[in-house]
Amino acid sequence: MRSANGLITNGLITNGLITNGLITNGLTSLGVSTPSFNQWFDSNALEFSDMVMKYVVSCAYAEGTSLTYRSSTTMVTYTWYGLLGLTPGWASGLPISPDEEQLITGCLAAHVNKFGIQMEVSIRGATATGALLSVTKEESTEFSEKEAAFFGNLVTDGVVFACSDRNLSGQESSARACALSSQASGLSPECPPIQHVGSCGSVCVLDKGKAHYTRCTVNGLTYLPLTTRIRSSDIYRCGDGICQVSESCDPDLRSTNNRYNACESDCGDCPQ
Image (tube, rainbow, N blue to C red; front, side, top):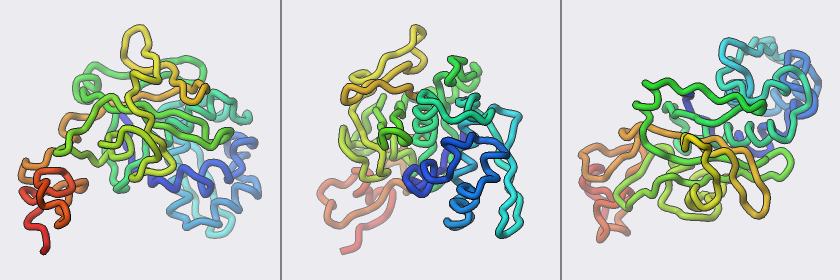
């Protein structure tokens, strides 16, 4: 299913999902009316809290549904809209289940963008009840570039992982730097706390139709993942004459011109 990413990385850690009281209270109008949620919402910059909830509800609620909250401090009303419907139990007011914890973790990670810009991705996988996310033929054709899978459990284990379905060359880069990176493994320098674990084929199992991954295992623990696809135009190449947001020119790397981070041809002369 198409979804616009743009979540900044600190929306994944303690100022976001874990501390707002919704894990045990349920993601409903009753859940967002509790003192713990009100305290969390008002303790951050309001645009930050609004951003986190926008992505949480988009991941958790089904398309055509929404969640409304009125701040007891500012009296401003916020409405967040559903899209993917990954966690129907939690969205109905139940405490979040282990499967739902994993899917919300993977979904938030799939929406992180290092540069804070919005770009559409295609998210493939299944909800906590096993219902497949819809992917139209048009979407499948348009989002043809394999990208990554995201998984983990920020609620219970405090971990979130990304594996890659594609290796970037030194000339290539993408605004989706949290998933596509020249880094093979380790903590993502672009998007902490996401940890890169190498190729998806080494840690994940594909469904029978080979359209998405059904489970991924790291350090002996198995998680429900979400698989992402992007447009081929969202992978940038140094030398195409456009200085993209993920490209730069570094004077210390002049000898490696045409790398994405030493791209004089697109971004102009490196300063001396």
